[in-house]
Amino acid sequence: MATVEKMPMLQEGYETLTADLRRLKEERPSIVDAIEEARAHGDLSENAEYHAAKERQGQIEASIADIEDKLSRAQIIDPRDLSGDKVVFGATVTLLDDDDKPVVYQIVGQTEADAKRGRISYNSPLGRALIGRKVDEEVEVSVPAGDRYYVVSKIAFI
Image (cartoon, rainbow, N blue to C red; front, top):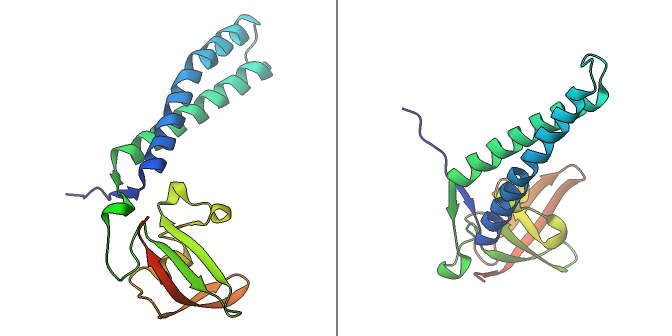
């Protein structure tokens, strides 16, 4: 029997997905109306409005199914409930790069990752390299721009 893989995420990520799902479900009726209106224009084979509305309907239904799947497998983790001396999901990690410049990342779920906001997925190359590391350990990461080296300076659960 297949096991369902849990999808770790922060409460904020869960709420974002829930809001996206609600928005998509609210958009459904307007798409049905657009399809009905386009049908009323006659010949469907050359009706661009109809095809665009049907395509949008397919995209919405696929997105709804994807989000519902993620929410059903969600394992909400509150970093404030965590502790320890190793990098785990939800931890906020301060790294020192080759120039001893501090870089701060929080390890989050795939749907929450946003490097510009300092949030990296636990599945990203850097996220995978950081999981299980302790303060003062070196981390080597291969990225498209080449190998990068960091030292774990601080681990926080905030």
